[in-house]
Image (cartoon, rainbow, N blue to C red):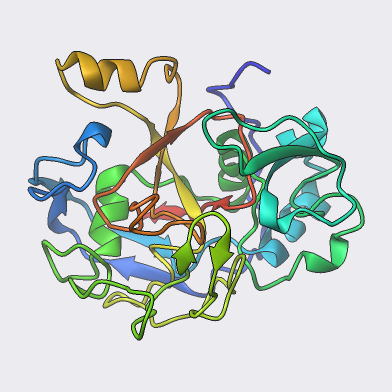
Length: 297
């Protein structure tokens, strides 16, 4: 399916709940880091950006909120249209047929009948918890929702400014204290040996409720971990190094995501840091990708 740069537009629905939306002050915001863990992703250098005041969802868009959108508009996500979506292997139902895997990440399998309604495939409707982040939504789906809800996806600078919670140049929304597999679990990420052993010491194997763990200084929940969040921007890495260029071959048209997910761990995908970044095809959907909106003041 060809990605669309012009998602379907819906009239903003009157009375849509805006509860939990947070005012973010403008000013000089930090972007990136001078201590990159994955330089190949374009995390460095640390720079500043002038940020206008904006408003942002206190948590990722939930299943309940997305259902309201679907019921009022009749919208069908790209996973529903295409017929499948990617599910992490440990979340596959026991009777799931064995299918093709992603060569570079064989723990991902596309499964027929998977969508935001049935996050583990056909018959998993009960797993669609109203308070959890909606998943199996593409960048195009997120933009369609944003058009209906009167918001938009954040820029990378806005997202990082909000995630830092007023703390400035820090690695995580709570500061610089590293999560671990022993006694500090400030967000929903992997504990153990990826991808076979998740100790679930933070209390969750898959997604956690959108409003869980301690919010940051601005009152925002799960800015890292839980689910990746789409931004409005293309994924670009500015580098003349051939190794960097080669690493990102084939990513033309990919969109930038931030925040990491419940599958991240320092030993595998150390991207639950504020400066971390990733690129994904705009029509892709998975069991660990969601979004939140910003609203212009």
